[in-house]
Length: 546
Ligand SMILES: Nc1ncnc2c1ncn2[C@@H]1O[C@H](COP(=O)(O)OP(=O)(O)OP(=O)(O)O)[C@@H](O)[C@H]1O
Ligand SMILES: O=P(O)(O)OC[C@H]1O[C@H](OP(=O)(O)OP(=O)(O)O)[C@H](O)[C@@H]1O
Ligand SMILES: O=C(O)c1cccnc1
Ligand SMILES: [Mg+2]
Image (tube, rainbow, N blue to C red; front, side):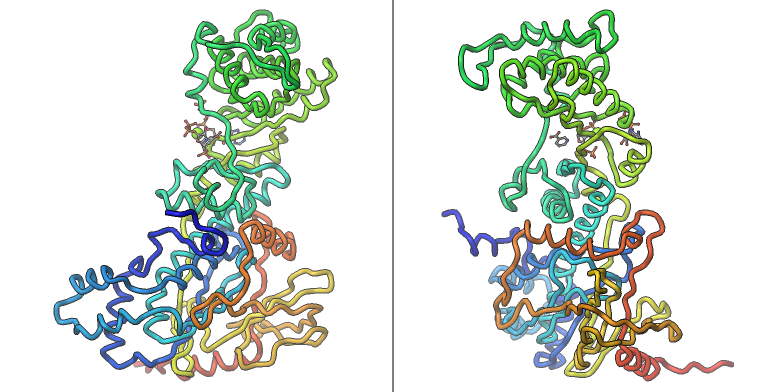
């Protein structure tokens, strides 16, 4: 098959994202809707979550582009119909399958927040309007495309906040929830703030920088120098190849006193492995130094090879620590780098990369920061991609209007009451560009105006109100899909990544902190407050005490 180009390539999607990637109840409801004559009904649904993940107070909205790609190809194939015919009860009328053949997303309108924006509980992230049956059929797939994407981007953004300017690489594919989980994790980790991934397919598909070191297996695959088939390396500037092993051994003798050892306890197999790796990648030499013993073996061997490479005009990149006390070992490593850099007047030696890996999570990074360390790069797998601290985001998809009439779901739990009707959220900013509050209004209301006082109300607590005079007002939902087409230019992954960064900057730091963050206020207009509470009273049955 010919390689796809440009726009076509961007509209391509993982093959498992298809109309049958849904819950059976969507199809059974579609049949029951159809049988009860609801094919012409027009519905509005909101997609939103009720609680921020990770005990935090913000969520990054992600997954929109994949939702649009899904709408773009949404139709039931002949084999889908055949499967459904075999699966639904025999009494299912044949005309329903004829109807299903005609179903597609051309009658749908999808409004959404920009992908990569910070978002908060109860804000509609997407508003989907169209024929009831079609809007309903989209529920599960849209949720699965948004929930993990947003959870993962948020997790990554939290690691980014904890890590400050340190480099972050995602190494989670082997531990992810299956191949699709792994691929999505790499994409949304990058969106949320990681610098690269070890996942080669994610690199190819999403244009993410791919990075990596080597495994312990590479080190343990060598036992001694006799296994080195070649020890010669051509200098970077060209010329006669020189024996890198001999140069390394002579450097090792020279720097031994800096390591305070009297005899060489370093592993010969490890040195052989490092020399061979350096010959393979003289410009990208990055070594795992914890296979045997970090101080007495790994570091000494690494520094010797790095100095030998330097003789040939190459600069080593750094080391990876994958066990032990990472704060302590990084400090020891950096001290040796500094000593060598001073003694041999090699300023770059001091700034080499010290990468840490091994079950790192957000709390480990924060703890390491508190202890003090010299790590400048993390490789993170399991906890990042499995979102160990909270494995799911609870986005839901609720009907808010049918045929022009508001709909609401009541609940004993106030937080679960849905906000009825077609709504528009606005983000109100201060003069300095800080987000002050998100205000949800009925779509029929006039938008808030810059420099005009607007009343912002708590959706459920009558006494909680505040006036806000915004310096900037941003309408959060815009139209992305209409008449069967994507109707906005979509940013690429790199641009969404920038947007995440920028959007997070508009949040005060107390909202972003790890421990007991301050909630960001999501308010409703006076109009929506009254509408919501009137309808609530109308719908709630009056009990009788006896
Ligand atoms: N200074 C530190 N402060 C807080 N946590 C740390 C520090 N150094 C390492 N850790 C974390 O402690 C855990 C240590 O893991 P574990 O007990 O399996 O030891 P290990 O170093 O991997 O041992 P092994 O050598 O047997 O592989 C890891 O999750 C690592 O991220
Ligand atoms: O620790 P994570 O955050 O998941 O990061 C990825 C881990 O994957 C590799 O280990 P590997 O799978 O080879 O096994 P190991 O845990 O025994 O090192 C690497 O050395 C990291 O330790
Ligand atoms: O490149 C690495 O160092 C790497 C990749 C995947 C998992 N652990 C480490
Ligand atoms: Mg590990």
